[in-house]
Image (cartoon, rainbow, N blue to C red):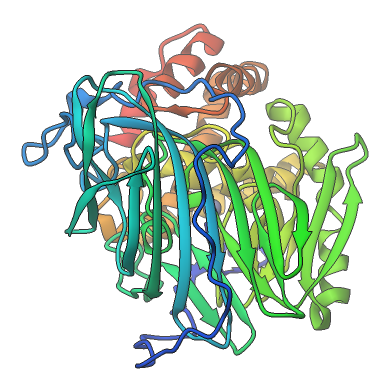
Length: 498
Ligand SMILES: [Zn+2]
């Protein structure tokens, strides 16, 4: 995620993060919205989606010793065990694949009709119930392995009683059909947005912004990066509009756009965007396919700024390991002052079509998307790296300029009184504070100086090779960097994180 930044130069590197309220403001849904979009998605039948082999991911129970006193991590319980965000996820099962069908119309403000097919595996033995994160909507039908199942709703959770208890490693499918108005409520983690989830911007566009806990506002899911899955989207929109999502556009049937993303993805990185878009295609010098979506009126400016994409993605592939996905690109959205690293298809605010944001979000394809956070309290590892890599790119031929930039940041953080505050587990409202971004970047710069360039970049490559497609803890990151440095770094990290 990136907020709009003003950088004042020269020498006074004052960085002001403007936490613009998303322009829609604190709206309330229009009343009595009548769905007119037809047909609504037909139910997904078992076996319809083509599920690729399940990715190997770290065990979702790997950190269950960090459980909070209030939420037990047991079968059917309502937490995946992230001590920073214990209300999210569930550790009883592991999702391999979501097929999401949506009917969306920008004219039908806040109405959404959807259906989701979840293919999952029981992780715990004798699993009799489970929870999905899901808020709002009326549930028309809920099937487990094709059989109707009882369910209840409470505190952001959809709690499903399984018709038969499942044994550990048993595969199962859940189909849920739902419709209704989207809920807009603030996230405790995001001070600058009125809400997360579905946004109806202007009269003709829809976009979805879910970091960190907003995907439950548009589809039922296990809402934590510890449970990644592959995705298929089938999105029906009015004539003349285009639906954009993660991965590859594999087919268009009438007004239904079908996208598939066959790499593991955290729920918060899934997105669907609807608008009157132009599709632009390109490829990087080494051949990574690029596809972008832009509004016609923005096309000249957009094309000028994204021209750097191919060169930059090859540069990052050299630094961190090959680009992990089959394609990459940006979709411009009317999201005031906020852009998001939605996997393979970055949400780029039309106010932030600039090189710094383009590079920042691209860096997240490695830092956050390919290797994700094990706990949301480790946000510095996402935003610190994305911020630092944008500086590395900007000053790639000017090492002295980079030093001046980092000195300026250190002075800024000293003046603001932030320097010395623990970067890990900030208060929830400060999860996306300027300190997480530039403080994280400064820490990473000093880590690089501490390790030396060869060890630093070798360590990053080793980190991506080891945790590819999964999640990693801060401790795992530190261990990899210590191996590369061939010396202990515990004291260095403790000084910054604790
Ligand atoms: Zn970011």
